[in-house]
Image 1 (spheres, helix red, strand yellow):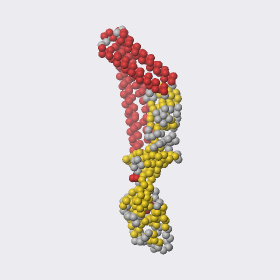
Image 2: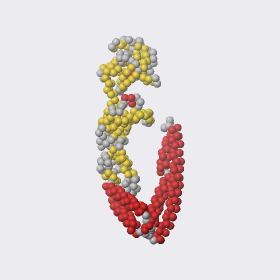
Image 3: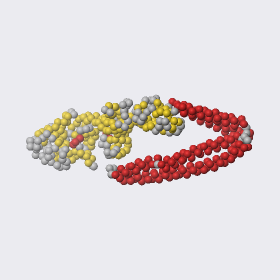
Image 4: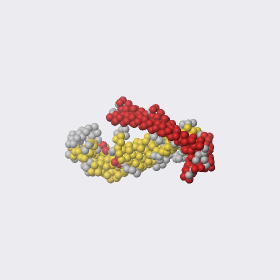
Length: 461
């Protein structure tokens, strides 16, 4: 049969095997040819191109919140997956405890100031106080040295344990690569589980957690020793106040200033804590690390918030579609049966395994996302690649490809002749031909049978 495009429609002419010659635009099809084929007269026309891809809705902006104080969490006002607006209260601290901590910080500041004033005013200490400080400092030095040695030993044991697990994990990864060509096998699945278990153990194995806790306790103990040593050093210095040099006085003044600065910063943190943790932008709470009623240490991670005002669709396209995609091209994205306008904002410069084959990652940024969007949903995108007019074209089904390139079969003197072509833009049913054949040539194909070079076909000039 012969297909000829008129506008955006094809005229399908079906030729019965036993009927005489039918002529279309100077081309005749004879029942005497060897095999009935589909045919198309190469012409010029319009090709509208869109590339359809599936992807995942993701946020391009996220924010992790950490505690500025060591205190108790009173209320967590959200759950994972909740939408919050900018300024919404997410986490509240225990206000009574915060106020107590403020009072303690203020009292400590007064004590520091009183200690400084007392040191400056007394001018001396008794011999007993001096002897006590000297004795305690000697003991503290040994305690600090012993504690530092214990810390070093524990750190080495912890590092060795982690190194052993990491080495085992590396070997598991190698084994996983060896089985990568059999992803459905039990061995591959077991290796994946072992890799995941190893990754978990590298952080949370019982002995690792225990050594980390020991290390934390030793560091706390060392800090206490050093703090006590500082007190004893101050006490020793205060006993010879009458002989104190100007340099020693400067040192005391610096300590006073340092303590005042530390207290000021601490009180600022408590003031912020009273206000609670508030959202800095409209978004979705994707992870909560704190526990309502539990205590958190300063610097502990509390939660993660992802913006819904900066949304991208992450997709993977094949090597045939990527040639038509460029950054900046407009796109229409359907999420939850609702269309959003966007544009291609990023094309990765590498291929990767997408799970269904090798692809190239692209990102589509939405122009005007809204609160209806749900992160992690699948999105269907139509990328508007280009619209061409007056281009040489053939049906996509007439195009063949092998390791040597793209080619078609052209009917000449009742036989199919293989011609290599250079192709350009493709649509769902048509493809642009840049070179290789000319307008007016008759390309042929057979859906159910592979045509070979020189095969007789039922197309005669």
